[in-house]
Image (cartoon, rainbow, N blue to C red; front, side, top):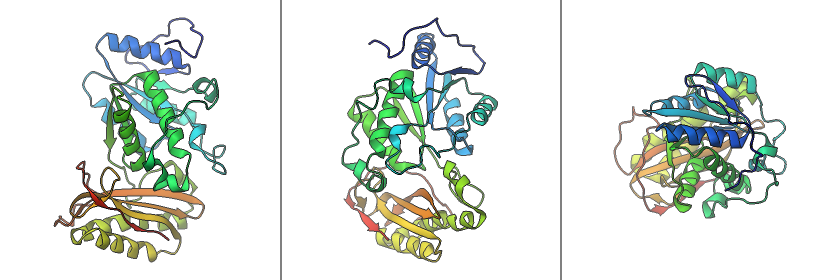
Amino acid sequence: MSSNTVRGPQPTFTAGGFNVYERPDDVARVSRALRSTGRRVMLVPTMGALHEGHLSLVRAAQRVPGSVVAVSIFVNPLQFGAGEDLDAYPRTLDDDLAALRAAGVDLVFTPTAAAMYPNGPRTAVHPGPLGAELEGAARPTHFAGMLTVVCKLLSIVNPDRVFLGEKDYQQLVLVRQMATDLNLDVTVVGVPTVRESDGLAMSSRNRYLDPVQREAATALSAALAAGERAAAAGAQAALDAAAAVLSAVPAVDVDYLEVRGVDLGPAPADGAGRLLIAARVGSTRLLDNAAITLGLPIDADVALAGSEAGSDGDHVTRRN
């Protein structure tokens, strides 16, 4: 395949150093050279504005023996729909690079939109029916844009594994779906959500919350914990328990509260499921989710534990 970029001099890579590249072709050539020596390239795709949640992905990637960790920083315009805040999205490249250098990252890829889409938004990956549900109902073009850029990054970097956070759970499921359906030679690794000491899921959007909103936002994780404790009585009990917590905090405007299977298909009558929340606090839209065990007793002291089993049943939903 020919590159979208005119080839320049062979890019250099310093082992044990901090290597930053802007050109897709440079990253592709470096990755190819590393893999030819037996190194295993791990990819952590981000849009920057990094926080401890992103760094947990880096650490998970670094634990793979023989790994070279590549982090991409790219604010992908295809993920933003009409009226969304592409221009307002936080861009903190200098701080991000400093954090990645301190974390011991080997390689950072910081392309421009022109380099990623030299012919404009022409070819895209369609997310299928799941892309129109949950987040897709509110953001109908989001997942096509997300999958397109992830597919491009996988093509450019050609990693052995790609690491994604469970906080954006629908994104994780859709990337796994894409890898399976398109026969992509990559392992998609989900990493548990990192939380603040009060339970709030770490997110680049949290910086938009004022102190009062920040306190209100903790209702999301509290609702998930309540739903998990109630889940032994079934999906509806989990929803009712979570909804009771959320309704007690008027500042939290719930978009959806649903129980699904772990693949985001129908919720099972018993076994592993996923409880998902989207809500707006002020002007900030927040997402959170947790694994739950339906119809079976669980230890109430174990909060927000993960699961990877599959299941069949019905969607159970509460929407405001």
